[in-house]
Length: 407
Image 1: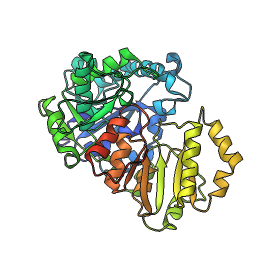
Image 2 (image 1 turned 60 degrees about the horizontal axis):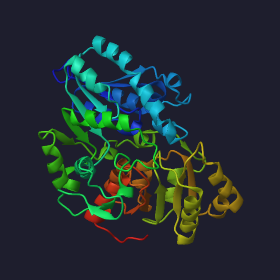
Image 3 (image 1 turned 180 degrees about the vertical axis):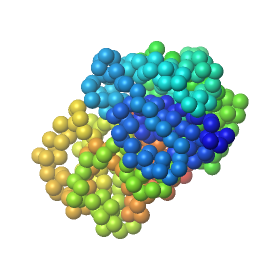
């Protein structure tokens, strides 16, 4: 075993395939051990097996997910799979239950763990890293711009200087960024949200105490904000993105998440290949974003009226029956089948965005989706829904090159 291979990076994500950086780490020659659960591991088994066959030192260790004991719905081991956002506290309780088994595995692990890379939401890794006296690096799903906005907003919030109404400027940023309180993440605007204050405080403490931070971004995109964010961590901030470009294998791109629920005979590639270059509008609101029936109807009719071919991703599960009922009664899917493709559930987003037929991406401004769209060179149409998405939009519209704005 080489000296590099003796280094064992233990990755503990928030049970979400979008947070996996295994392949990127293993390509540096180190050993990478992923701690996850059975249902989550099953989502990327084929891709990991191919990486292992290529010579990468990756190991997947499954932990028992005690969701039922925590009151989380059976058959769900991922916050994306929960039927509603109001299961958030139960989900984090189940995450906390993983600590004991994980620490037993770390005690017996060979090679010994050298470092923990965890999502900030897995807050028990703070104590685990201290117990094993190894550094803990937070893998952050946000941009440095958004992190600096949050940092400065916390200062304003502690000083009780965030106004209840009207716009205000986030201080101490390289650019003038104006926001309203309703556009802020739930920590600063808890009214009307599914929000758990004590958990959010633990997450913030976990972020502040980390040895360093790995960010799914790249310096050329937000250099001034990378520089400012690094000052908060004694320069220990690493931009490792865009992670969407890590997979060159077409199978990896397709199999990097859940299985798409569209007719296999209606081949996605065949459908895209039949369209002219840069004509397809791709509309997707992420794994957690859900539109109201009124919003969905307006979007669907707008896509139809545009005259352009489109791909529209539709959520499945609790609360989606009224949307499916409208689609059926209105005849929308049948009426637009010649130039519209509806994908129910998860969609192979990287595959879609990298196809030359796609000319626009209607996005909720989740950071992973934002970076994927930028990396593919596709113009973005922004429709933020909640959390940090409104701040991400500010980076795109207020600092990036805006093509226009419609309200």
